[in-house]
Length: 246
Image (cartoon, rainbow, N blue to C red):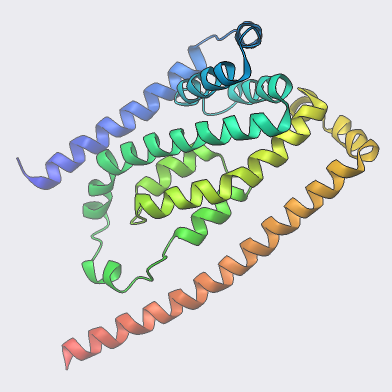
C-alpha cells in the first residue's frame, strides 16, 4: 500500500478516535461525589494511587468541564501538596499516552501533507520546540490535552516533550491546586469569590503574583529567543539554497 495512503488512513483513524473520546466525555455521567467518598476510605498511598489511575482514565475522555471538578475533589481530599503530586503524575501519564498516540497516527500524514523537508529538520536548533512546550505547560490558559495531541504532530521529540511536561507542569498544577484547596468549586463558578479569597489570604496572593510573573517573563524570553533562532535558521537555509544553485 502506498505510504501516503497509509498515513492518510492513520490520520483519519486518529481524528475519529479524538472525536469519539470527545463525544464519550460529553455523554458520560460520572458521580464525582461518590468517587471522592470511595477514595476517602483508603489510606493515602492507596487512595492516591487510585486517584492517579482514575484521573488518567477520565482525562482520556474528559478534556474540559467535569475533569475540573475532579481536580477540585483531589485538592479537597488530599490538600494542595499531595494533590499536586498525584495530578502531576497523572498528567505525565496522560501526556505520554496522547503524545505517542498522536505521533503514531498523525505525524506521518502531517509530513506528507505539508511537504516538510529534511533540511528544515536538519538545520533546526537542537532544542527546537522544547522551550515553547515548557512555556505552554506553565501557562494556565492552554489546556494540557490539546498540547499533548498538538505536539505529537510536530517534529519535537518525545524525550524533549517529556522533559517539558515534567519541568513545566508542577508549577501550574501547584498554583491551581493551592487555590482550589482554599476555595473549592467557587474557583471556577464565582469569580468574585476569588477576589475575596485573595483579599483574605495574602500568601495565596503572593504565590499567584510570583506564578504570573514567572509565566510572563518566561513567555517573553522564549518568544524573543525563538524569533532570533528562526531568523538565524532562515539565513542558514538561504545560504544553503544559494550554494546549491551556484
